[in-house]
Length: 237
Image (spheres, rainbow, N blue to C red):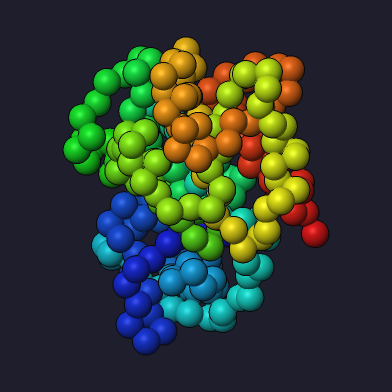
């Protein structure tokens, strides 16, 4: 059953936005009385389509109890990468339960963007919405505004980890053993060429713990999936 997130509810009637209405009518080619899943305010409902005019309207049939997340709030600060790789990172991170993604400017980032580039952030959040619908989430992870390393240092988060290839870094397995499900965790992932030494030193000097994924060096677009997979395994019920 197709899932849609909505923000407009009037008693037992949901109204889809124009993009989702187009998807219902022209892509899925749904008919009146077809059923869809609707997420409103992190609650899941089964609804039936009662109008195929734009915007599409649907009526609640029942509310469904959906399990909440069983992992801590994981924030990925991802160094800016090329568009195709960034899309992949957002999609896979969403599927694996990420809480938030912070696009981050680093010295070795191949692409250079302005911190106030709202168009990219809007597009990235749209990708998150679509990935959340596809992966049957009941919430949409946020893509934050483009940030600097200084912005990350100023975040008030209990656990801050720097993903590194340094030999003396702690293993991700060892640091996760101290984390509780109620915690928020920040992981900073570098670009294709990695962080330069001054950036790593700056983060470590400001309380970040350097961690490693083992002997293999991962691509930047693989790192977030590895992290979230490890966390899902660690907190698996």
